[in-house]
Image (cartoon, rainbow, N blue to C red; front, side, top):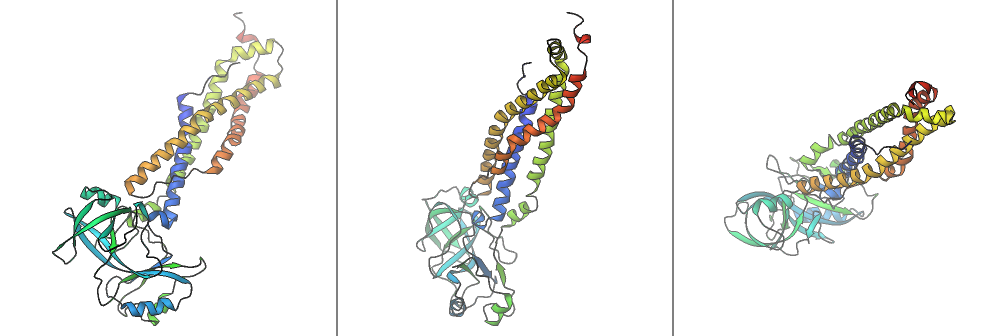
Length: 363
C-alpha cells in the first residue's frame, strides 16, 4: 500500500503550530527580558518632578556597596523635524555612563550627539549618522546634533506628558542640567544579589522629596509592552488550538485513506496477511504520513514564525531576536508518531476485521 503525500491542510495545520510557538515564545521573552525593551540598568529610582541635588544623591549612592555605577537624569522633550519627541537628558555619575539598549550605531560621547528610537527616526525622516536641528523644551534656539545611534526605550514618563516607549524617544548627554539637581537616577549593581532600596530608606536619606512618591523600577516596561504582557499567553493558547486542528486533520486523513484503500487491504488479506499485519500496514502508513507532514510543515512553520516575529519586532522598534523552543523540536517527532499511531489504532482494527470478499467480487 503506497502512502499518499500529506495534503495542504495537514501540512498547514502542522506548520502553523511551530509558527505560533515561535511567535509566542519570542513575545514572552521580550516581555520578560529588560535588555530587549531598552533597560540596561539593574534598577531606576524616579520621583518625576522636584529635583534633588547631585551631592545628596551621590552621598546616598556611595553608601551602598552593591551599586557599581550610576547615571543621573531628568525628563525632557524636544522638537526635531517638526516632531515632538519625549526625551531623557543623562549626566554621568560613577562608572561607565548608562544608556538605553542601542540597536544600531553607538552611544553618545558628547553633548552634541543623540540617540533616537526607530519610530522617532522614521517620523523625522532621518537615519543614523545624519545631523539634525533640535529645539529643547523651553528653549527657542536650535541645537545641531548628530544621530549616533538607534535605540529602544523603556518607560520614562513625567505626569501626564507623553512617555518614551520602545521605538519612541530620544536620549542625550545633558550639557546644561538643572542646577538644582535631577529627577531620576539609573543604577547598575555589581552583583545580582544586590537589592534595590526601599521607599522608606530613600525617604529617610532625603533622596525622595517629602511631597513626592519615589518609583523604584526593576523592569520599566513601556506602556505598549505592558499591553502585550496581558495577552502574551494568547499565541501559546493558539498553538494549543492548532495542535488540536493538526490532530483532527491527521485523524481525518487516516480514516479517509483507510476507507479509500479497502480493496488494497482486501488483496493483502487474500495474499495471506493476518489481522495483525493488516493493522500494521495502517499504522505504518500513519507513521509515514506523519513524518512527511513534519518534514515539510515544521521547517516551514519555524521559518514562518521567525519571519513574522522579525516583522513584528521591527514595527515595535525592538531587537528582532526570535526564539525557537528547542523542547518542541526535540519532542515533536516522537510525540507525533505516538499520537499518529494511537489515532490509527481504531481504523487499523476496523480494517483488520473487515472481510475481504465484498471488496473483491468484481475480480
